[in-house]
Length: 184
Image (cartoon, rainbow, N blue to C red; front, side):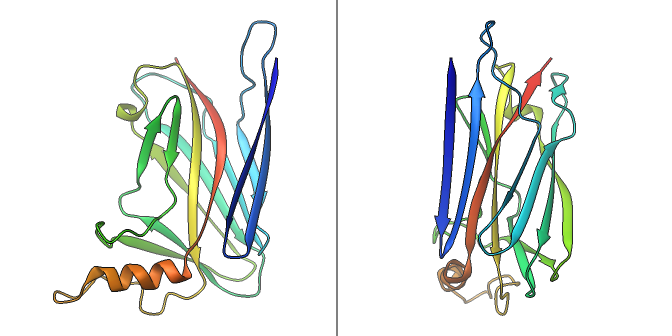
């Protein structure tokens, strides 16, 4: 049996298409995906890969990323602090940064200069993957081109909704998935 999954994420003039073929062998096993690379329509090249595809139960899952800015303008990655990790039916998701008036304004911004790249590592604690031996991992990204007025905490008498609205008006988001990890 062979299944294909088409992931389409679009926001503010950006379109990202990612097609993954998930096939099963005669033994009924899914193909394991160790790395994913995609480029947005506006020039961000993103690569995700697993440090280890088989993780010993009780140890964290480590997901590496590299983001290259292929444009002539600086961009700023936007990360939730701490990262929002959701678990749903065999999938672990690092959620895209989202703005919600009921959420605390707590974001970090990482500069990616023109024609440069940044890399890092995301950690999934063992408490997030209990009960199953195979997990699919999806990672959400957000970025802005202008951080003027965004890279700060709200003032004591300031309504955080105004700051959220400003971030939301500039935020571009996308998600990449799915990496596959097995728990031994």
